[in-house]
Image (cartoon, rainbow, N blue to C red; front, side, top):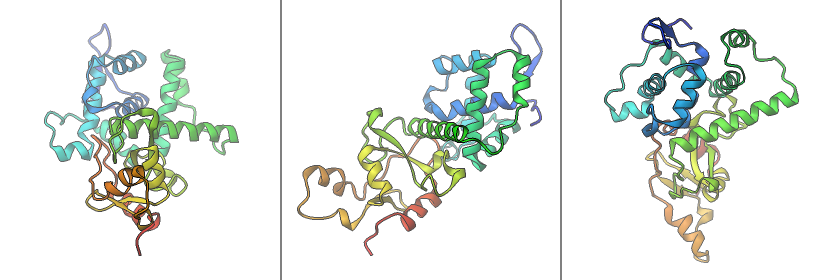
Length: 272
Protein backbone atom coordinates (compact mmCIF):
# COMPACT_ATOMS: atom_id res chain seq x y z
CA UNK A 1 0.00 0.00 0.00
CA UNK A 2 1.60 3.25 -1.12
CA UNK A 3 1.93 6.17 1.26
CA UNK A 4 -0.67 8.84 0.67
CA UNK A 5 0.21 12.57 1.02
CA UNK A 6 -2.97 13.03 3.05
CA UNK A 7 -2.01 10.10 5.21
CA UNK A 8 0.84 11.65 7.21
CA UNK A 9 1.50 13.16 10.60
CA UNK A 10 4.63 14.86 11.93
CA UNK A 11 7.12 12.68 13.76
CA UNK A 12 7.58 13.66 17.39
CA UNK A 13 10.31 16.26 17.83
CA UNK A 14 10.91 16.76 14.10
CA UNK A 15 9.45 18.62 11.18
CA UNK A 16 9.51 15.50 9.04
CA UNK A 17 6.19 13.95 8.15
CA UNK A 18 5.67 10.28 8.94
CA UNK A 19 3.37 8.22 6.73
CA UNK A 20 0.98 5.67 8.19
CA UNK A 21 2.05 2.06 7.64
CA UNK A 22 -0.45 -0.61 6.71
CA UNK A 23 -0.19 -2.17 10.16
CA UNK A 24 -0.91 1.19 11.80
CA UNK A 25 -3.97 1.63 9.60
CA UNK A 26 -5.18 -1.88 10.44
CA UNK A 27 -4.79 -1.20 14.16
CA UNK A 28 -6.59 2.14 13.87
CA UNK A 29 -9.46 0.58 11.93
CA UNK A 30 -9.68 -2.18 14.50
CA UNK A 31 -10.20 0.46 17.18
CA UNK A 32 -12.68 2.34 14.95
CA UNK A 33 -14.81 -0.80 14.95
CA UNK A 34 -14.80 -1.08 18.73
CA UNK A 35 -15.64 2.36 20.12
CA UNK A 36 -18.81 4.44 19.69
CA UNK A 37 -18.67 7.33 17.24
CA UNK A 38 -19.21 9.87 20.02
CA UNK A 39 -16.00 8.76 21.74
CA UNK A 40 -13.66 9.33 18.79
CA UNK A 41 -11.80 12.23 20.37
CA UNK A 42 -8.25 12.81 21.54
CA UNK A 43 -9.14 12.61 25.25
CA UNK A 44 -10.51 9.08 24.97
CA UNK A 45 -8.32 6.73 27.03
CA UNK A 46 -8.37 4.03 24.33
CA UNK A 47 -7.26 6.52 21.69
CA UNK A 48 -4.48 7.79 23.95
CA UNK A 49 -3.28 4.24 24.53
CA UNK A 50 -3.30 3.39 20.82
CA UNK A 51 -1.47 6.63 20.00
CA UNK A 52 1.24 5.72 22.49
CA UNK A 53 1.46 2.21 21.06
CA UNK A 54 2.08 3.34 17.48
CA UNK A 55 4.02 6.53 18.24
CA UNK A 56 1.48 9.12 17.14
CA UNK A 57 -0.50 11.87 18.79
CA UNK A 58 -4.01 11.22 20.14
CA UNK A 59 -5.27 13.95 17.80
CA UNK A 60 -3.82 12.13 14.77
CA UNK A 61 -5.41 8.85 15.81
CA UNK A 62 -8.77 10.48 16.53
CA UNK A 63 -8.71 12.13 13.11
CA UNK A 64 -7.91 8.81 11.45
CA UNK A 65 -10.94 7.20 13.10
CA UNK A 66 -13.14 10.06 11.95
CA UNK A 67 -11.77 9.58 8.43
CA UNK A 68 -12.86 5.94 8.56
CA UNK A 69 -16.29 7.03 9.77
CA UNK A 70 -16.66 9.20 6.68
CA UNK A 71 -16.48 6.04 4.55
CA UNK A 72 -19.18 4.19 6.50
CA UNK A 73 -22.53 4.20 4.61
CA UNK A 74 -24.33 4.68 7.93
CA UNK A 75 -22.68 8.09 8.40
CA UNK A 76 -22.94 8.98 4.72
CA UNK A 77 -26.70 8.47 4.93
CA UNK A 78 -26.82 10.87 7.86
CA UNK A 79 -24.76 13.37 5.85
CA UNK A 80 -22.58 14.04 8.87
CA UNK A 81 -20.64 17.24 8.29
CA UNK A 82 -16.89 17.44 8.65
CA UNK A 83 -16.26 13.86 7.53
CA UNK A 84 -14.54 14.46 4.20
CA UNK A 85 -10.82 14.00 4.81
CA UNK A 86 -10.33 10.28 4.17
CA UNK A 87 -7.21 9.46 2.18
CA UNK A 88 -6.69 6.85 -0.50
CA UNK A 89 -5.04 4.56 2.07
CA UNK A 90 -8.03 4.94 4.40
CA UNK A 91 -10.34 3.87 1.60
CA UNK A 92 -8.13 0.93 0.71
CA UNK A 93 -8.20 -0.39 4.28
CA UNK A 94 -11.96 0.16 4.56
CA UNK A 95 -12.46 -1.75 1.30
CA UNK A 96 -10.12 -4.55 2.40
CA UNK A 97 -12.14 -5.12 5.55
CA UNK A 98 -15.42 -4.97 3.63
CA UNK A 99 -14.19 -7.59 1.16
CA UNK A 100 -13.04 -10.11 3.78
CA UNK A 101 -13.85 -9.25 7.37
CA UNK A 102 -12.68 -12.57 8.75
CA UNK A 103 -9.17 -12.24 7.33
CA UNK A 104 -8.72 -8.54 8.11
CA UNK A 105 -10.14 -8.84 11.61
CA UNK A 106 -7.51 -11.49 12.31
CA UNK A 107 -4.72 -9.49 10.67
CA UNK A 108 -5.60 -6.34 12.60
CA UNK A 109 -5.68 -8.20 15.91
CA UNK A 110 -2.29 -9.76 15.09
CA UNK A 111 -0.87 -6.34 14.22
CA UNK A 112 -2.07 -4.93 17.53
CA UNK A 113 -0.48 -7.81 19.41
CA UNK A 114 2.81 -7.34 17.57
CA UNK A 115 2.99 -3.66 18.47
CA UNK A 116 2.09 -4.41 22.07
CA UNK A 117 4.82 -7.04 22.39
CA UNK A 118 7.64 -5.12 20.75
CA UNK A 119 7.54 -1.43 19.91
CA UNK A 120 11.04 -1.20 18.44
CA UNK A 121 11.04 -0.16 14.78
CA UNK A 122 13.65 -2.76 13.86
CA UNK A 123 11.79 -5.74 15.26
CA UNK A 124 8.44 -4.41 14.10
CA UNK A 125 9.64 -4.23 10.50
CA UNK A 126 10.92 -7.80 10.68
CA UNK A 127 7.64 -9.03 12.13
CA UNK A 128 5.61 -7.28 9.46
CA UNK A 129 7.29 -9.47 6.86
CA UNK A 130 6.18 -12.72 8.51
CA UNK A 131 3.36 -14.35 6.55
CA UNK A 132 0.35 -15.94 8.20
CA UNK A 133 1.17 -19.67 8.32
CA UNK A 134 -0.47 -21.92 5.74
CA UNK A 135 -2.20 -25.09 6.84
CA UNK A 136 -2.69 -24.05 10.48
CA UNK A 137 -2.50 -26.54 13.31
CA UNK A 138 -5.56 -27.20 15.46
CA UNK A 139 -4.21 -24.82 18.09
CA UNK A 140 -3.59 -22.05 15.53
CA UNK A 141 -7.07 -22.54 14.13
CA UNK A 142 -8.59 -22.31 17.61
CA UNK A 143 -6.68 -19.10 18.29
CA UNK A 144 -7.93 -17.64 15.01
CA UNK A 145 -11.54 -18.58 15.72
CA UNK A 146 -11.43 -17.03 19.19
CA UNK A 147 -9.73 -13.91 17.86
CA UNK A 148 -12.35 -13.44 15.16
CA UNK A 149 -15.22 -14.12 17.57
CA UNK A 150 -13.88 -11.55 20.02
CA UNK A 151 -13.50 -8.91 17.28
CA UNK A 152 -17.03 -9.55 16.02
CA UNK A 153 -18.57 -9.27 19.47
CA UNK A 154 -16.72 -6.04 20.27
CA UNK A 155 -17.57 -4.45 16.91
CA UNK A 156 -21.26 -5.35 16.99
CA UNK A 157 -21.91 -4.41 20.62
CA UNK A 158 -20.04 -1.11 20.26
CA UNK A 159 -22.04 -0.26 17.13
CA UNK A 160 -25.30 -0.78 19.03
CA UNK A 161 -23.90 1.03 22.08
CA UNK A 162 -24.29 -2.12 24.19
CA UNK A 163 -28.06 -2.32 23.84
CA UNK A 164 -30.29 -5.08 22.50
CA UNK A 165 -31.66 -4.04 19.11
CA UNK A 166 -35.05 -5.57 19.95
CA UNK A 167 -35.74 -4.77 23.59
CA UNK A 168 -33.13 -2.17 24.54
CA UNK A 169 -31.69 -4.01 27.53
CA UNK A 170 -28.22 -2.64 28.27
CA UNK A 171 -26.67 -5.20 30.61
CA UNK A 172 -23.53 -6.14 28.69
CA UNK A 173 -23.28 -9.54 30.38
CA UNK A 174 -26.71 -10.43 28.94
CA UNK A 175 -25.90 -9.34 25.38
CA UNK A 176 -24.69 -11.39 22.43
CA UNK A 177 -23.42 -10.45 19.01
CA UNK A 178 -25.78 -12.50 16.84
CA UNK A 179 -24.82 -13.57 13.34
CA UNK A 180 -27.55 -12.97 10.77
CA UNK A 181 -26.01 -15.40 8.29
CA UNK A 182 -24.73 -18.19 10.56
CA UNK A 183 -21.04 -18.57 11.40
CA UNK A 184 -20.85 -21.88 9.54
CA UNK A 185 -22.43 -20.59 6.32
CA UNK A 186 -19.99 -17.90 5.17
CA UNK A 187 -16.39 -17.72 6.39
CA UNK A 188 -15.74 -14.22 5.04
CA UNK A 189 -18.72 -12.81 6.96
CA UNK A 190 -17.85 -14.35 10.32
CA UNK A 191 -16.37 -11.06 11.55
CA UNK A 192 -18.52 -8.72 9.44
CA UNK A 193 -20.43 -6.39 11.80
CA UNK A 194 -23.03 -5.73 9.06
CA UNK A 195 -23.84 -9.43 9.45
CA UNK A 196 -24.60 -8.95 13.12
CA UNK A 197 -27.21 -7.72 15.57
CA UNK A 198 -26.74 -6.94 19.25
CA UNK A 199 -29.37 -9.03 21.02
CA UNK A 200 -30.06 -10.05 24.59
CA UNK A 201 -29.75 -13.75 25.39
CA UNK A 202 -33.46 -14.46 24.86
CA UNK A 203 -33.79 -12.65 21.55
CA UNK A 204 -30.46 -14.00 20.39
CA UNK A 205 -31.64 -17.58 20.91
CA UNK A 206 -35.04 -16.89 19.33
CA UNK A 207 -33.41 -15.23 16.31
CA UNK A 208 -30.82 -17.99 15.96
CA UNK A 209 -33.54 -20.68 16.07
CA UNK A 210 -35.71 -18.86 13.53
CA UNK A 211 -38.54 -17.84 15.86
CA UNK A 212 -37.87 -14.16 15.07
CA UNK A 213 -36.70 -12.34 11.98
CA UNK A 214 -36.52 -8.80 10.60
CA UNK A 215 -38.47 -7.68 7.54
CA UNK A 216 -37.56 -5.29 4.71
CA UNK A 217 -38.67 -2.31 6.81
CA UNK A 218 -36.43 -3.47 9.68
CA UNK A 219 -39.42 -4.48 11.78
CA UNK A 220 -39.60 -7.59 13.94
CA UNK A 221 -41.63 -10.56 12.67
CA UNK A 222 -42.45 -13.53 14.90
CA UNK A 223 -43.12 -17.11 13.90
CA UNK A 224 -46.61 -18.54 14.12
CA UNK A 225 -45.21 -21.10 16.53
CA UNK A 226 -44.70 -18.36 19.14
CA UNK A 227 -48.35 -17.37 19.13
CA UNK A 228 -50.99 -18.78 21.42
CA UNK A 229 -53.43 -17.91 24.15
CA UNK A 230 -51.89 -20.04 26.87
CA UNK A 231 -48.49 -18.36 27.16
CA UNK A 232 -46.71 -16.85 30.14
CA UNK A 233 -46.55 -13.11 30.74
CA UNK A 234 -42.83 -13.05 29.95
CA UNK A 235 -43.48 -14.95 26.71
CA UNK A 236 -46.20 -12.51 25.70
CA UNK A 237 -44.30 -9.33 26.60
CA UNK A 238 -40.84 -10.36 25.42
CA UNK A 239 -41.81 -12.19 22.24
CA UNK A 240 -45.40 -11.78 21.02
CA UNK A 241 -45.82 -8.08 21.76
CA UNK A 242 -42.62 -6.97 20.06
CA UNK A 243 -43.91 -7.96 16.62
CA UNK A 244 -44.00 -4.97 14.27
CA UNK A 245 -41.55 -3.00 16.38
CA UNK A 246 -38.63 -1.48 14.46
CA UNK A 247 -35.24 -2.65 15.61
CA UNK A 248 -32.82 -0.05 16.90
CA UNK A 249 -30.21 0.76 14.28
CA UNK A 250 -26.51 0.97 15.11
CA UNK A 251 -24.45 4.13 14.73
CA UNK A 252 -22.31 2.34 12.13
CA UNK A 253 -22.37 -0.94 10.21
CA UNK A 254 -26.12 -1.11 9.54
CA UNK A 255 -27.41 -4.68 9.18
CA UNK A 256 -26.96 -5.86 5.62
CA UNK A 257 -30.22 -6.23 3.65
CA UNK A 258 -29.02 -9.34 1.82
CA UNK A 259 -28.06 -10.99 5.11
CA UNK A 260 -31.51 -10.27 6.55
CA UNK A 261 -33.12 -11.63 3.39
CA UNK A 262 -31.06 -14.81 3.78
CA UNK A 263 -32.30 -15.14 7.38
CA UNK A 264 -35.93 -14.72 6.34
CA UNK A 265 -35.65 -17.23 3.51
CA UNK A 266 -33.48 -19.92 5.08
CA UNK A 267 -33.77 -19.69 8.86
CA UNK A 268 -37.12 -18.14 9.79
CA UNK A 269 -39.90 -20.52 10.77
CA UNK A 270 -42.47 -18.72 8.66
CA UNK A 271 -46.21 -19.06 8.86
CA UNK A 272 -46.63 -20.97 5.61
